[in-house]
Length: 521
Image (cartoon, rainbow, N blue to C red; front, top):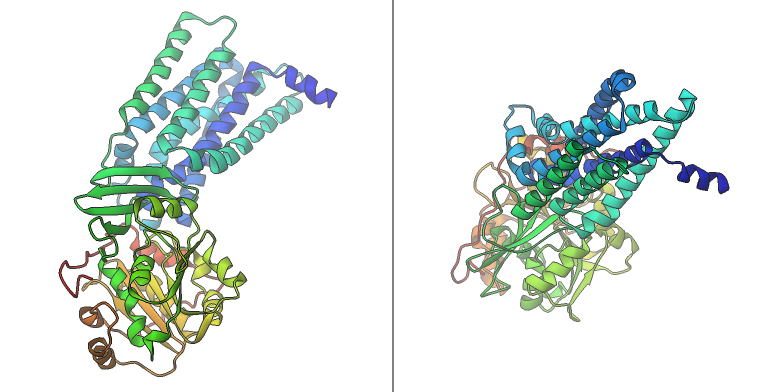
């Protein structure tokens, strides 16, 4: 311990710069995922591009910094490198959206689409930070080259660890992207100023003040870009996604990573605003006796459109499992959700909840998928078998998938359809838009081996009082999809990202439910 104290006391200005550069570089890398996800999603291809760009930019910085270190390394130049990085961060705060749009314009295959944008946004600042380690090693007061480089690597790595954990577990759950960027920029400015003390030349001093003012102006003026539309009621970064609540007219919409996820009519909170949520009632036509659907589980909460309507419409106990605690809080604050004896909310991963619960459900609705972010562990044969085990003998499963019903962009839907067929004797599907665009496709799987035909559904729709008329929804009835060219998804091989790849860059269409009696409800 005494040796550690002595080591800390003799930490030099260059070594402080190395530590801070590690914090900033890894913090920006984690933050990059949040910045580019609304445009490109958060697939393995996006994260591969982020990691690759940061490593390439750092390597270039190390290379050229090492070549120039002997002739140019000085504390003053370290200060300039830190200030240059902070200035670029100020540009990101103010003009991140236009830069992101510019980087998106390159005609590349979908899996490489994020590469130019990530390079444009994060290549330059990371490149500048790469110069700091070789400069610091050159300025080290240690005679041995190995000891000097080892100390620099250790300090940089410790800084990176702090940046990774601090950004992931503290900053992102607490602040928005702009504020976090401002904090990193401010850290670099403060470090640049402090390592120049006790004496600082006039030019570096005014540069430090200028960059500090630039950061303040950038975060104070707000980012240049296009909002989701409407009046923003609430906005935050959660541990899982960017969340925004916006009002436009009488409609309140929940956006997750920039995509419309759920909506509520402020004058009629249980009315179905999005057409696809009406299909959640389809099991009441598939069931032999709809009155026997006593216990329902929704995996994925969002704005709780389905659970709220089920509680109002049916004499059933509804459980909702939602992994993001902020989504639960927002649903209660802004979407008129109230827990009760009939509505129970659980903050947990859906698969873990099903694995650990001893409850049996008559209906399970999987509503945890997004266009570009699909929890693969809830797509596999093993998961479907787990869900099947938690269903009653006549239980029904509904999966709200986002895909195309045909063409190259249908691979995920058809793979999931094939996977569910491995477990359930009958599987049906209902596209929600009358075209081959990316849309919500409702897949209904039953434990009943008997086929329910389209005509039978129409008869039941006319005879049963289920609180909603599904005549138009039955029109999209489909069975026996072609699946020979898609894989069965399993825990040890679920290539969900590659199946979603053809959907990248395509428009996701969510149709509003028509307003009026019967079909609007």
